[in-house]
Image 1 (cartoon, rainbow, N blue to C red):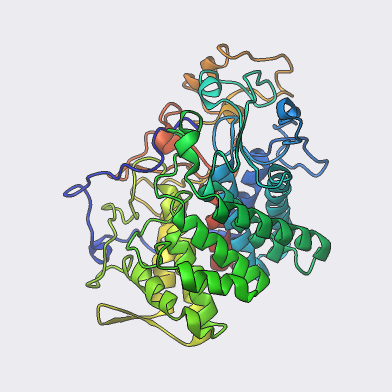
Image 2: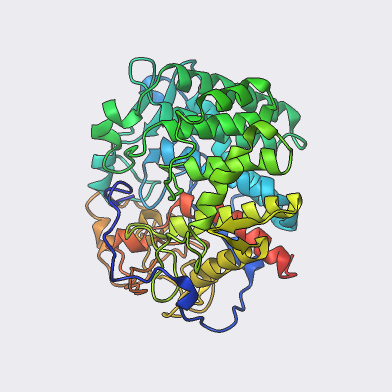
Length: 497
């Protein structure tokens, strides 16, 4: 992950982009194989695996890696996922990706059919690692690898010889944000395995409770004391309040305990429940927490959480074009645009929330009023579908931004393992500096990272497909995780599953 400032700096795009998507051109009827895209979106996670790969590994150009991770502190921290195109295990985006993968399965797993087991495997791979990272009470191991030294090399994960330094949060170095996100991921995963593996599910939820208690008791932003290690890569710019609300929301859903309902009622406003921040991603969880808690009111009739329906409506209405409440910026080609750096993460996360909220509204037989304009669940689904269709190729460039899907897709990923010859093709070690020939090569990546979704086009709907352009050419787990759920719904609703 070579990106600088993944958050904090919103672009000044006035005049460059259109705000009213209703006036934007359509690119003909979308004809996409959502089922194929779903299969590939899940397969991507196998290419991001760290640790000892299992016999069932389907991405054959990868091999086991990071097998001594954690040994410097006498903790087993093998496994987990590389977040993007480098070889560092960043715990903050890893936990968020795990949460969103689990949420995708919880909401739309019943539609996945043959892909459900692969999706569960992807959730378990992340959850297993988070159990290791939280093995010691009042401690969360939040990063493995010196990011600065890792980025000074271009190496396959199987070859990496840069320091695998371990960083942690504890009472003297608090990190409520990363700890509460980890608790959310563990709680969400516990629900995925509640029926299929009750013992594992119980272990996950017990750990989630303990980690959340630590996050709440020892408050602070993890990047305050770890800034020289986690910044500028994954600084916590939105604070930790959103993660505490998010974590409590997931524990409420996983346990149904009145303890967490009471916590949300007492602390919700202090934790920013009604803040008008409409960007949902690895750093800011407020919008996701509002949607998640709205289910308790809409579907489960928990009257104490009625306000979250209003909070959720505000977020959803900000994305509905042609209404007085529309606050979303779109490119001329119709793509939701938040940031120049890895913008596709916001496209996939927003699409997932639109489809999930539509599901809750249908269950409750409700709609949304956006500045006096009635908005149906069907309209929310249409907005989400259009964003996913753009991602899959219905865009001005006629390019799919998912590798391996469609006739035209990115060939020069900013991704070390994909851009260098595989161990099978080149058994000899490729050293730190030697690998840069792969970064600057004009040839397509030798290993097709099927299912990887890149950062996407710029504000002018243009995509140069350059490996050095990490803002637009780098894939990431948190781009794919919410897309898994969205594709499952679209495949099912299109009669493909």
